Length: 499
Image 1: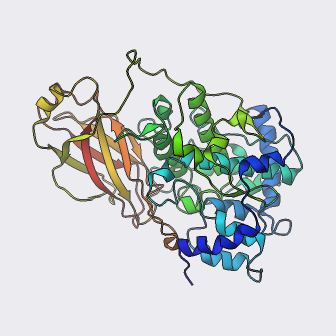
Image 2: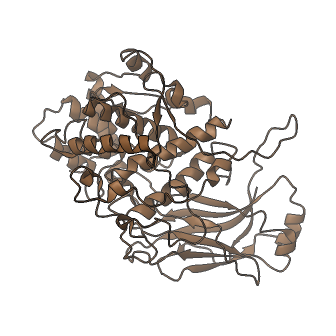
Image 3: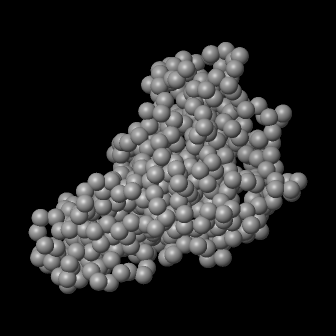
């Protein structure tokens, strides 16, 4: 039987028996306030100590003889909170895991409310789901970290982070690559990239995950964003971090039944160290004075289970400052530097001008990226020649290359480099790389409309009135290696946009 998302949510009305426990009420019931604990770089001595503890906890959580899959303390329960395995439906897994359980079993009711709730990758397509990417994952990792403290009976545990943006740390930490080690074997996953697909590294052999990539797809460009949210075609910090660095790491580490696909990603223990680092970058961006949204964003609520299986419903405002969380505050041992923003004239309020398409595809329609050779997308001016338009564009406007509506039937398992070629001068260096981590539809019973709907690159310095006088630039999109034959990835539209 297939159950719709609406049906599942309606069925959760009985969860009133669990009680709606706002985070503020839940926090009052916990221990007294404490000084922030510290999350450490996994490569440091302190991080190594925490990683050893992590492995011991993971071993217990994965062992069904110690913790049942139906228990909110289990590894499967927390994996499925992100997304249920991609080869089955949530309804089928609820029926399997809770076979014979009373329909009002609090564990089953909590699963109905919390499984498949990842933001923004099992989303409705609404902007509030994308904007919730960072707070939802911060809460998700927070409650997971608290659970490990309970499993270990160790209140000092903090989740380490994997700082893959630092040169020399782009290989998977060695403890995740030891299938025969008595302690660390629980951190091993065999379905990480193994280098047999051209363009991928042999991750479990200790190769740097980006060793075959042109340019530098593992970068901190998102930290340079002024605003949190997307404005027009300017992505903002949240979406740029999500779509680029976050998705890139997922695809470079694992294939479609591992880190490379949202339904499988949280099954791999490295997932949690990856998201601890993503959270660290948000903390760094805020520490530099960049501001989170206000208004309704602060009141977005999400349901989680705490370490005792209680239903908790925090809102974004409860987690905007890691050091001010009412119970369990934390901070990081080090934060990457954030580049300064360009100065703003006194009294001026930075706003994004309305976007205008200045060049578009010569041949309208979806662009098929299924081959290994890549594609060239000729562009033509939209309405008037580009030169005069750029000359009158004003200094306050930028030019973006925009790729929209990415979709795929399955994860291609490689990145795609994007090039912008000015006339008669092919470009050697890519603008950057795109991925299809979030472009594959998942559990149809949930009504999800998955698909990364927009990538944008600031190409202002490359597209000038002088450069466009000789003609309109063209775009090349080239897979780094050999994409999976059954993926059938497409891009819905390619445009140059002035904003």
